[in-house]
Image 1 (cartoon, one colour):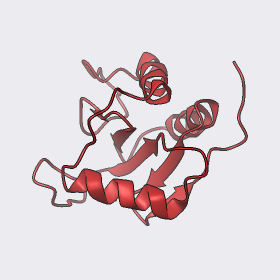
Image 2 (cartoon, helix red, strand yellow):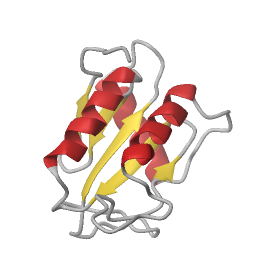
Image 3 (cartoon, one colour):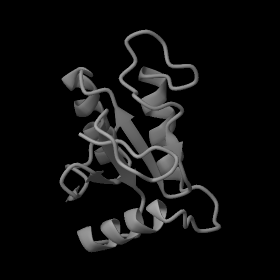
Image 4 (cartoon, one colour):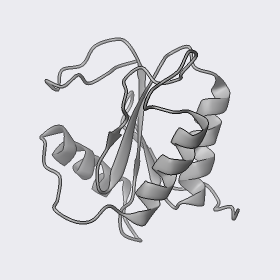
Length: 130
């Protein structure tokens, strides 16, 4: 389990995931390249993707990050939100339901999920409609 503090180094404190709004047809290699650009502080100049905005609103409606209350699943707050992704540093003891909610919302909003622990990329699960 790792976390990336402001200086970009890794420390053993959290379980880290991010969701990415990339164009249709994006591959796991495209996600990994986008993650690398983010780690280097390169964020494109464009309006936030509506899928990212909707995901952020949905996940923080259930698990607020501003402020994070007692029992919050977030190890680092506020969540890192950029125009094409949201990075979530989860407390290693967070409930499994939080991970299930992240996966479900990624599917609902057609976002790819990146696991920082092993570099895995998961395409959106079968989309579900609200």
